[in-house]
Image 1 (cartoon, rainbow, N blue to C red):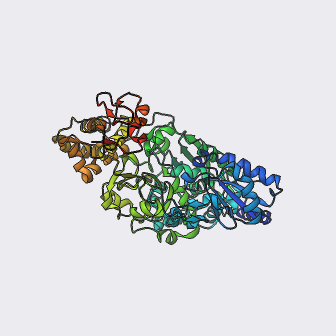
Image 2 (spheres, rainbow, N blue to C red; image 1 turned 180 degrees about the vertical axis):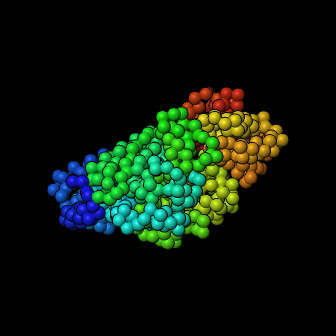
Image 3 (tube, rainbow, N blue to C red; image 1 turned 90 degrees about the vertical axis):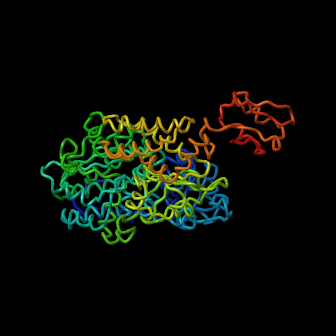
Length: 617
């Protein structure tokens, strides 16, 4: 396609592309995101493409390889329009039937529809499925309509309309006012008001300024930014362009984790396509605005998600945070004024410009506007990527969307905000997804991780797990983080291994508060959250580990013993075959016995026993 030299040429291209697609009667959308790729979605895509060609439908039926649809555990997923028919767990062998029946005849294949695991009810469309029903998918819904490698798809869907609106009709100061009025706050963890950040950067002295997209998503189990960047990279680029125009920047960077190869690939393709069309580069769409973007791969360090560490890494140095006495909007990348927002924040900007600040502010709470994407994982029936309006109660996310607990267990807690977040008990599930409310409760929204735990989880062990992760990822530059996390981990390890003393609880709490107050960067300041929140809400579990030398959840190996109930054991011998440590003995059809000296408490025997005869005390 030729370079576009005005907004009129862009609009003409949009109408031309829409006319070209008028002959398409059916669209088959197959998820090509990382989650579905792991379930062989590429084989499904190839099989459907071959079948459409074989049956002579490749001109009238559009096969669209999309980004993530959110319901990753049901992958590969497929949506067929018209009808919004939702198929899940699709295999390459289903291609002939899908094309022959659903595409050609409009007949629904019931075995491919989603079946609720509790009620047994079958759902035909995406909107009917409980996982989607309570969501408000403002960003993620766009994934299903767009091939992330096609700028034409993005333009047909209205892409770059917000850019033309600001370039030809909205002054930079008014853009910033609109973002301020919208109430958009940073989605990367801190929740800082986006409009205020842009305003301070615009007002900072100096002609050379930068914008950066932080896609260095390092939280375990979190993949919100990855899926947005994989599924709709042009949306993020358009948001960055609007931000650059507003603050006066001519250069931008997308700093993306090297462990996200698909996000890196799609981002690079999007940048090249935008350059070819004249949407990046000099005098964009014939205006006075010149701006370009480079894709930079992160080095794999969790701390590089912190703003100053990211910028130092981008400069080619070791990714360590700098003191915050001067903000990055004044002294950022290469010591120039810099605006850094995460993927989800930038992706919200085009919709705010097109629909207005009041539209965005109509969703959410007084202090937290819009929607938030959450990575819902843990001990629940439905896991995946979720988008809800700010202010949605945690209970709605866990029970209505997540489907509640699995295996008949009771849900005990939810950990929000990633490894530096806090753990909230069941009686706090009425709290809303809100930056300020969750912070007051000892947790945070963070980047959007939400891990659900049931009664089989030991909260002391949970705190130990996250401290171990943070210890590994700390850069060690400042003393509070370097030594403080190590010392906290030593105390919690003592408690989980039966060496804990009651006075250590107060010491642990004091140490955690000190690290929180004195650490250099956000990693260190929030690292104590798992400790402080579990002490606040689950102190009795700490006390049981110390006073009774017992782990109530039966998790901490040093404090548990495996034994076989002779009244339940049938002597089938399955546990003997499964025990690699040869710790179980007993005659055929006779109750078996576990040698506690040989037992490594691996749990294999317990998982293999069909009679629930192996118990933990």
